[in-house]
Image 1: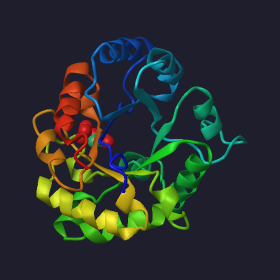
Image 2: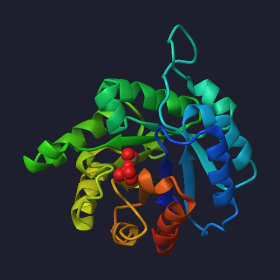
Image 3: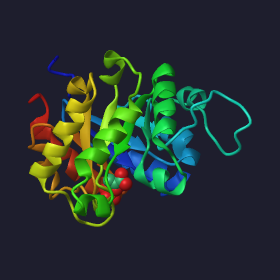
Length: 254
Ligand code: PEP
């Protein structure tokens, strides 16, 4: 594995937050800050703010992501956005299979797989979210659930292509709750995810779920955690930069 293959990645999922004006203001703050070397930083604003975000990020090292996409290029899919449209405006990353979309938009494992293949075919890097519910966690089903979701997401994709993808392990009970998984436990789950599909040994696997400046260093010190998918803490420059700074010691360590 090249030293760079698992370069730390911190990605901000803004969810349904930020107008265009607010997007421009936050990105101006972020781009004024000298980011630590050796770390990739991505932000995923809502669709309406992506063009403005692309303008603000032009010439910076901060990558632009979308929060979902349709797998088709065009067609009669009211309300959907295609990978061609995203790529055209400078989007290079896309979050797929977030638990909120699995729960509220009926996204299935098979649908996530179609989107992952389409994203790869259109020059977008998928950030595939997997994770167990609170009940599944309590019943000890975590490993079975996340391994099944991961295998389904990457079904029939060549290992070299899988290696280009990112996975985010996000225990649903930790999202937006202020609770984080125990770092050693999260690391063990992520090691299982890594071992479940050929190619993931070279891919970046993130932790997500209430990751913030004060807990990110402990998570990022784990051997298999290559970064974070950050919700709430990505909405303000100060809290997002605190997570990015906590990832700095890991840069160059993999
Ligand atoms: C998320 O929803 O992807 C997430 C990690 O949210 P938060 O950081 O707010 O828990």
